Length: 419
Image (tube, rainbow, N blue to C red; front, side, top):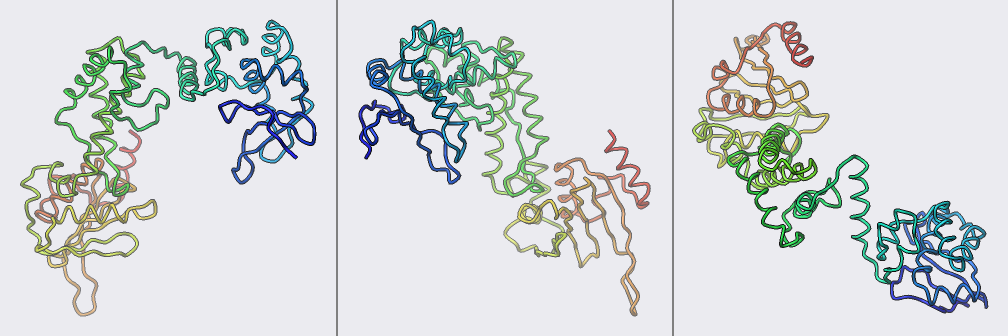
């Protein structure tokens, strides 16, 4: 038989129960192997109940000290009840100075106390009783998260000023630097918001006209890492120049915001518009080709014809985005009528152009000329595909140098990779 004897408004603060006539403290902590919350109990006395009932600070301190014992129990171990009971008198009945001394010797959950209003200054000086004078029954988990975020920054030497903190709050990255940034003006102190917006305006002006293109080699929603790095470098430099007082964390979050927004715009733009933005719009208005065949390294084929409502380049890159994978990095565009094609080797940043010199006759094999060239990132691939679609292998001449000797090409590739 279990009856609740005492409970507080916050459901997570340990309750006092009476079980089979015995007083016990009951708390939920951790989870079992099925991710269900675990519940622990251990015996207390009437004197302990009286303090728990009347002194919120001591109640919270006891909870903070018992939680590490619950963590040690893991997903199915037993609570060390002897260790838990041994904490009762020193925390609930001892003088404040003795409680402070105890907390300098044992493990305890700092974030739990901060969430319930502990004064951080005295807490960090080891004055836990004084720190808990402002304790509240209600919990503010965000306060504890911000405390730990500040500690992580302090450990690497980053100390935020008011404007730095306001910028991080504006982008939603105060707690977690890996969170995708967004604009949250309501999170900023109204007195600091105009200064934050001046920093944001500096960044926007610096990257005006810049874009982050798609990179179908890495999937349908992937974007060009080089474009991202170029925009980040530009924004970082402009913000540091205009606002030298900002710490690195604040500068990084602003450039992260600009790059993330640019990448989102690219992902939501149809592939045709991405291809047009990547080069001369005249290059993509039509094609000299009448029909093309796209294939991947798995033997999957897709056809394109001049009467298609979409450009050949857009159709090809969509095919790449849908099919590209770690084990599928070779894609071919072939014009069967003209007897020519290009093969893109994404794994090696290279391309081969293949021209038919002589058709096979009387059972003989056809004769091909194969030439290789190095490619500079997704931008280089876009230019090659556009040129081939527009004018075939002859239009690729300016995108060389082209090497027919495989050994010479491999030496050139190794030299590039060594750099």
